[in-house]
Image (cartoon, rainbow, N blue to C red; front, side, top):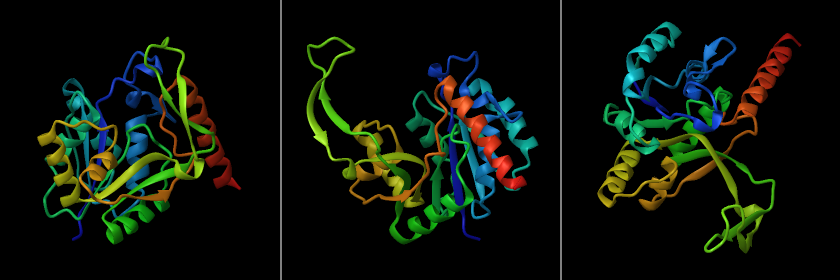
Length: 240
């Protein structure tokens, strides 16, 4: 059987959400966000197992929630780290080396679709590394901040929008490539904001599959309102 593992880092505190608990445990449609997201991932039958990394104090309670979610395939909750990179690395260490592809997805991107995941898997099989992304709409400026107030920056360049893509998750890689990229980053004491950056610096091309503006990462309180709106739209579409 072909193994495709999904890693879902869920150890962040989510301070920008301003809630009294980490944002991955806030509820959407009566479910913790992490469970809602896992169920969306589980809609893709190609995924054979899940690895969720979270804070040590949340491991037992989250394992119980995941078990009750009935994802239909093995799902293991492991200790996360102080950074996203460490949380993914801890989960990756548990993945069987015979695994073909590893998918990494944010715990708080609940609107990923089966079609997007399947497209990403196909591209990764063909090219080794692929992420979801969307074109930039706004004009993008490169700035300098030295010797200026925190709320002021000096424009140093305008970057053509056609050269800019806003990265999303899932991000997918062959197991060996992701393992080696993480190993190299650890050796060099390098930290990056996403997995593709580690694979890029390892010298491997990463390709972008068109994502969706709906595939939002819930970060601020207003994002929860938008998520509820999207969910209501989905329900109306099903009824129609």
